[in-house]
Image (cartoon, rainbow, N blue to C red):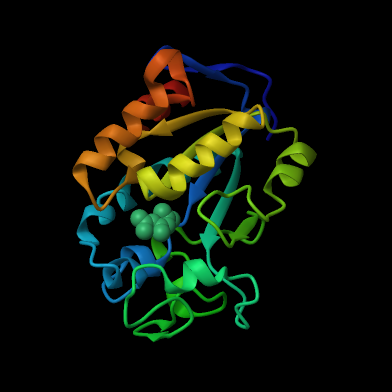
Length: 225
Ligand code: TIU
């Protein structure tokens, strides 16, 4: 389906407008390692239940987005099995006994191809939806995301996923510097820390939308009609 109509979403700091042909839903790192008990997120000492509330709003937004025929892109944070793309600093950060590449309850932690690295079943990508495997927090660093977006004619991104202040914020900042307009639905992003959730969203929309816009899934769904 192709559409030249403009969709106007109620948002902060002001309305967010997009043409469906030039806007993609970018779902960040909804991986088992971050959302399920026993994964990397929990290993870092985090309460994964804080992230699980984002699953249902993401599922609804993704369903509507797919039904409308709009473009969807997924990302996963992780590394090659030989770990040649893993910075030594990232490997040892945290001084944990178990780190990236070590055996965990869902396979080797944050290694591509392992069960824990994959996307949760509720939001599993369709074959036609690109999956960006990224070694860093931002989805643009050392990936072909920018090239893919340029090839698809995408100028605007609805950015959802986890975590709000880490991979979502880093990606929004990277996208903003590359000229993309980003909208973040607050209920579709999650943080292990409530105060970072609040501030992570405030940082995006402050100063006239210095990095982008903030709304929620209900307002986006309402705008899509
Ligand atoms: N640790 C944490 O909060 N997040 C990450 O390491 N990755 C993402 O945010 N995806």
